[in-house]
Length: 142
Length: 151
Image (cartoon, rainbow over all chains, first blue to last red; front, side, top):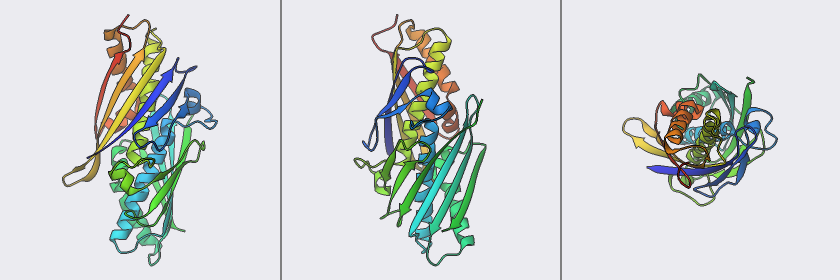
């Protein structure tokens, strides 16, 4: 069992106040400032829950794909993954678009796409976000 | 309401077991973080993981939801503090799953009492899009208390 923690402070109202992702268990990041405006309008250099979810999904997918390729005997040299999360205030997350470009010697593109689809279906973050109405994948060899 | 798009990317070099990645906030440049599989399974100082990023996302989503509920009922908060713990576990026949997210909140809210704060926590949980999303497949728990007692 694995536990990961994060701690956020907020001062003032939603629209005029501001928050800080103060610390996380690993110490890898923080403090990161957040505001409602940075979430719902132009980000102006501040992060948001949706950007963090994009980062979580991109990294989870990359690990799952890299693991699947290695198990099949065709390990990747390099994977470059992008996750784009679409958020509609009042509705929630409506779409996540995953894109991956891989450098995988000895593998053709059709097989790479299959492994990428399997990683998209099987990675723990994909399963946790299964309620998102649309999750797309664009996979190709670099 | 507008559509809001946020983007992040990770470059991964090598295999899962021995390789490592760097995850970046493309939309904002707000972070650029090293990540490895070792740091996902065992806590490694200074290296993040998908679950830690989800914990940060849920804590941030929940705090904005709580603030908006408290303001909606006429008791705006002065300060709120939210802690989130995401748990991943191996589920028989289904590999690794995110099985839980535990939210713990404390707040300074001048005009709220324990009962109204408890109601705001429940409404914030119901209104937070991330609680709903992850709650479909994991157990989300919410607890909290007013700092310095109730009004």
